[in-house]
Amino acid sequence: MNKENEHMAGRPLDLCDIFPPSDGVRIEIFDSITSTNEYLKKQKTEHSIIKVCIAEHQTLGKGRNPDKTWHSPHGKNIYFSCAYPLKIDVSKANGLSLVAGIATVKAIENCFNKTKYKFELKWPNDILIKGSKLGGILVELIKHNDQQLTAIIGIGINVNMTEDKGDIDKSWISLKQLTNHDLNRNEIINYLMRHLFEAIKNFEQSGLTPFIDQWKNYDCLLNQEISLVHGNNLIKGLGNGINHLGELLVKLPNGSIKSFSSGDTSINRT
Image 1 (cartoon, one colour):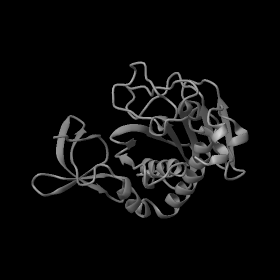
Image 2: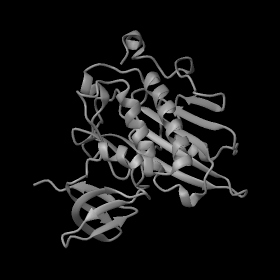
Image 3: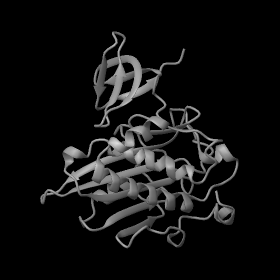
């Protein structure tokens, strides 16, 4: 974190500290809300405006699995969503969650020494460090009657949380646990918007292909023995990266490579 911003580390979310990258961005900050994603899904569509919703607290935050909630203690973490009007057809939107993941990690890296901390991405939507979950991405696509497409992109990052009160059933970590001090959430959100919106523009123009090598730099499954729960099937093999559609590539025991568009992944620990 920049030295001049250290005195603002513990302050609440504040529009005065968050600078949107263009006039076409509208930001709302809530003390408490059910879900930042759900709030934006209920708003009137404006195809020329990027809408951002940020909250100090969520009562019904959720992850990619609808059966699981996203733990949201007040004033500790980042609960961020944006409604982004896409200039592409829904058939070309595959892989957007991976692009959002790359942008989020780059935003976090802006506040850290890249050589000291190795942030990773686990297909399809987890941000990890030291094998523990730091954050997650949830992308929902809405196709309107006029055929316009809006992406609701939800991003959760564990920033200053130090305890979970037993609500989380998986290994997790926060940025504060890495650094032993509070971090300025406003600064991280500023970087997040800039990286995210720039990445989406590039994605609209060129698709996922330019991001494949970037994903490779963060891919924690690459060349690892992994398990994939796909529907009712359990697939085991070697992580082999992603393809141009954002699908996970798995090298099976027989040597063939198969692609998967959905599923839950884990690294096989010996």
